[in-house]
Amino acid sequence: MRTMKRLALPALVLALGLANGGCMLIPEIKDRIVELAVGGSTAVEFVSVGTINTFNETSTVDILDGFNLAQILSDAGVDVASVTHIKISGVDYRVTVPDPNASREIVDGTITTNRNGSGPLPLISGFSAAAGAASDWQPAPLDPNGAAVADLNAMLQSILDALKNGTSPPANLTTITFHIGGQSVPTLVPTNFTWQMKVKITITGTVTVSVPT
Amino acid sequence: MRRPVAAFLLALAALAYGALPAAAQLIENLGALTAENAKKYLEPLPEALSGTMNSAIFTTGNVPVTGINFSIGIKVMGVSLGGQSRVYTPTDPPGFTSVPPVQQAPTVIGTTQAVAQGGQGGATVYYPGGFDVDEFAFAAPQVSIGSVLGTRAVVRWYSQSFGAHDLITKVHYFGVGGQHSISQYFTQLPFDLALGAFYQELKLSDKLIDSKTYHVDLTGSKSYSILQPYAAVGFDSMDMDVEYEDATSPGTNIAVHFDRTTHLHMTAGVQAKLAFVLVHAEANLAAINGLAVGLSFGY
Image (cartoon, rainbow over all chains, first blue to last red; front, side):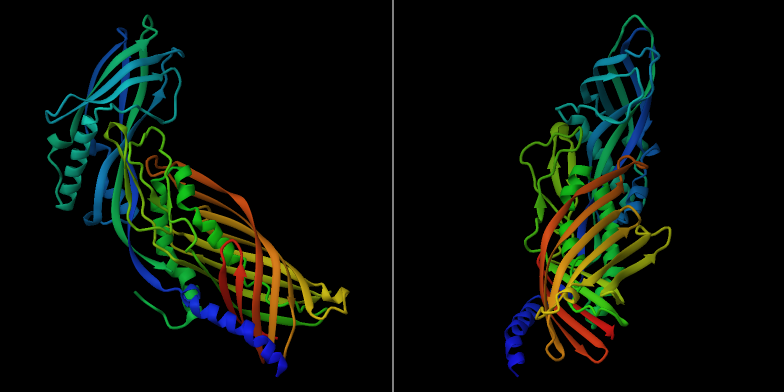
């Protein structure tokens, strides 16, 4: 009997603790509508070749050729109807085939975009990069004006809207003409390298997740 | 909202099934984060795992010197995440320069809303929402068998494979350790005393989450009829690695290492033995304070 009295207090404390934290040990499975963020990207390849060494190149691409939004959403388990935002998060570049001249550099580079008569709008400016060796993806400096990014955001929204409607956006809304300008040094040696530009995209969408809590 | 009836079955089901959809979405949420931000997003997880996995392993200081003793059962450990960080300040990803106001983003246990951070040049980065979790529970089947020279072995194990197309392809949980009687060397002690050590590893999809914990404690207990109060003091040590695919560079994996952390672990509990049934309840002061209960069958 005395033993039981000695145990009464700690047992009571423990019981109160357990009662107070009942949910802690008996988790409920609750549905949460979680807004997740997923990433995607689309890459465009450019071949820079010539003897003048002042860049003045244009390249026209349909962004949908390398960007499958439906697949990105499917891989992430996000229903297209649940997508809440889609925007540009940045631009990367890399040299895939280096110039024969190991000291090749691009200086004062610019890239503009023109979509359905919207441009040219500055996307990248003040761009300098080594092109004499293959490189991993590196960030490119976005033009502070932001006009090209805003235009590309509008394009992404039109792609999303079309996907939600089960259609494809008109090609003129997804076709972009990139113009590349700048200098290639050393100037007395012909330029010949291949590089890629990757437009990074950030997407949010809601999913219902069962969470034990 | 669904509330199963049986607590133990629910806890086990939560580990095996309920947590998996969340873990699957966790992969997607991580994919958009840099390694540095993924570490901040997951910051509450190692301590939650440490506080639960390292509890309810040894519930007595009584280890017979010889003879056969055996038990099999399930342990359920829970912690409150109230004191853990629910937000973090993201580090700008490479090439992205945030412009004021700089936002705070939810951690894995934080609010479910994603957060948009504006950047220079009109760029935007979204940081994923959390899962709005207040408590974290972990269940573990446990077997103990002894005794040889006052030593018993303890094993925890759970493994489940899923389809190749499932985002979580495998759950692997394993723990092994033992408890050695100290009382046998000090026969005048008024209570039973044993030294225990336990190693555990938890892996999701081989590399998504790979955590390893070590637990060492000194457990004292004394029997009063069917009741046996016990107390323990020791420490837990844990490290965790996370690896996931970079969503913006498919085929490229990002690895995140959480440095090993060590925490004092103190336990107070009561065990009751009714014929072949053992039940116990305990409170733990550890990486995160929590409670644990267990139900075992044996002799």
